[in-house]
Amino acid sequence: MDVKAVISEVLQRIRPTEEERAFVKELMDELGEIAERIIDELGLEAKPYFVGSLAKDTYLAGDHDVDLFLAFPLETPLEELREKGLELGKVIAERLDSYEIAYAEHPYVRASYKGVGVDLVPCYDVKNWRDVRTAVDRSILHTRWVNEHIKGKNDEVRLLKRFLKGIKAYGSEVYVRGFSGYLAEILVIKYGSFLDVLRNADFMLRQKIIDPENWLRKEPEIAMKTVRREVEEDRPLIVIDPVDPRRNVSANLSWEKYGVFYFKSEGFLKEPSIEFFFPPVATPGDYADELRRKGTHLLTILFDRPELVDDVLLPQLEKSARGIETALEREGFRVFGRNYGYSDKKAFIMLEVDRLERPAVKIHPGPEFFTERGRDFYRKNERVWLVGKRLYAEKKVTENVLDILSSLLEKNQVSLGKNLREVVKNADFLVDYVPGELGGEAYLFLSRKKDSLKG
Image 1 (tube, helix red, strand yellow):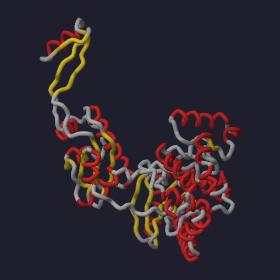
Image 2 (image 1 turned 180 degrees about the vertical axis):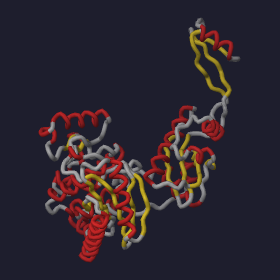
Image 3 (image 1 turned 135 degrees about the vertical axis):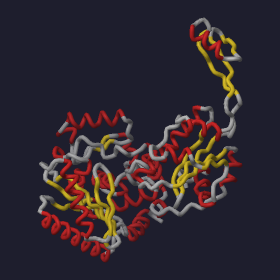
Image 4 (image 1 turned 180 degrees about the horizontal axis):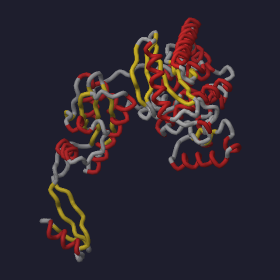
């Protein structure tokens, strides 16, 4: 298929139908009326604002989550905003179908209405970046800026979002570290179209800095401080927020996710295919065959899934997997990769290691023999010898990787997510075996198909 045919087919699948648009409009009208009525009933000085992809008309077909922000006057003390904002959100949610309290910078209400998720978030009624007090305040400014600049390119944004979802590079959450929806909107506004964003993948990486509102000219001191900070952090991209010169929109974007976008953009432009947007589900093979082929081993830590939301659980799983990898490499094992996630009831961490046992002894270099520390080293060790001026000793060590890891965990010598410390210590440790429901996951991990840049 040529590129026009691919884009046409994708748009048919991701562009909301007229019926969907009517449903979304009616839904937002109803929610707006409910919010305004309750604000009036409670005698509060607050205004409801719709933000996010629905308010910008950049949402994908079938994706109707609503972000309704409850904006309080700037003179409202922060504690009062949190308290009254949460109370207001709960009263609104009681008129809907169901709700729960969620937590970010401050508590907010996550509700459901007519089968659609509705986030009710308190914020300040900001007019510009100087008014911003909390992280969520900018969302009102973001929505306003996109709607003023998008100029009919809404479908181009939809294409870029779906492309990023297809290549698994969409979402700025800490456990994804990809492109946010707002970043996708900025890139389309900056470069003009979905295809032009892809064509500029290499250019924007070399250019490094994208400044849609010319903050480097209008607020050079503040904008340059942002640039210097982000350069020091070695970000792949610096996109100075069009509504706030202090912020890099792409601060959460990792090199890995940008690299995926970089190669997939080139691949699509060379050979356009609908599979970039809607990749086929990978067919898992036999993970045991992969282990035999590679001559490596699979260490799996399996435990009951904690009652934590993804925003909390997944970053802690990542931290724990990284901590276990670091601890094992410190003990002389090579770790070729790590993987983590959860199924319905279980959470897991997988590591591919080079071997299950190490030599029973470890050579321990000591100090120079004629020092006080040298004499102490000589007294404490049985098998000691000299190489030049330096003393060396042979120490007996635990051999098996499971025994080593258990010992390290027991001594709290492994960096773990704070909510996972006890469950990991009491987890099941599996070697070269996983339960049936994790077989496909193990195969995709070991075969590199889970994160492959090709195919």
